[in-house]
Length: 55
Image 1: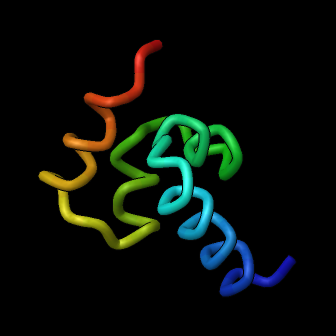
Image 2: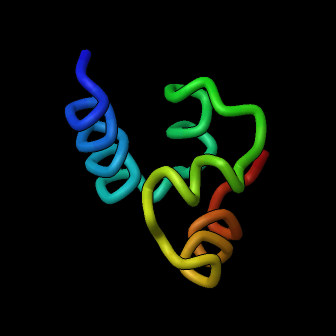
Image 3: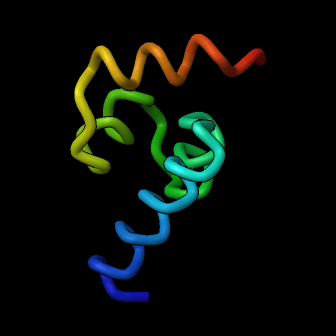
């Protein structure tokens, strides 16, 4: 899968589910901050999304 396609799919999963943790796992990132930077979303938005997800 190309980098652009991988990023697009990750972005769509995040938008549709609001589940950053799922996107983090799909991308194989160890840190959620890496996923946030990869998706190009703002930290405040990421925190708001993460608060909605229980682990």
